[in-house]
Length: 281
Image 1 (tube, one colour):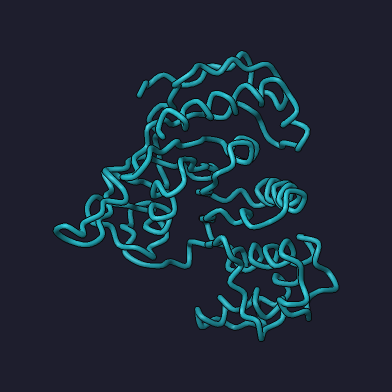
Image 2 (cartoon, helix red, strand yellow; image 1 turned 90 degrees about the vertical axis):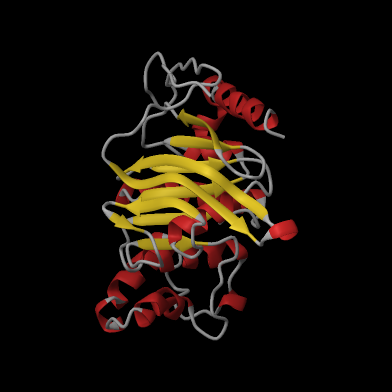
């Protein structure tokens, strides 16, 4: 793995870029999320399986990082450890000065499945984390309504999950993750089950949300195009046990539009990432 960063000719939404194969982002200073030599092992003896092996990376505050790699390589396991939903076997994950040792109000999470409560309305599902935290729902109801309107669900506040499409349910899930205004948003392939058109719409929505709220994010995906369109950096992971083998800066400035995906520079960067991933299979 090399240590020299991508050197674009200029950072522009559709400007020319000459990404260097194998280029890796420099070490980050002022890290907000810090992952240091983290490993995850399941079982013992002959049943022992190492899912993640000494993974290390930093994420500065406000940066969007995509985690990309072969299927089953341990990406989701790594994300769940960052969320405090899985314990590390060794190493350390920290948010600022605090070691992650369990779930936190500072972290919003989106999963592959929206995991909405079927007996609650869209608005009630968005407000459910507020209930879990023991906060006053009345004080957050206006924000919940604003978020639903932001994602295009005005008029659907009283609909239950079975009355919503897959894309609409994931829009509710985004609102639920944002309702407590967390500093960090962790996303585990949240759009993978959607059809191509709905997935594109959700990518555009997430670009807009990121422009508005400037969260710090980790986004697990199998889609190279999705990673390049959404992220500031892409971490490429090898096949299990997972470890970061490439750390590549995405040299397209924000705000970004879907038309970026039609440019030569975008296509070339996707091809480079595909080569990196294929070299790990």
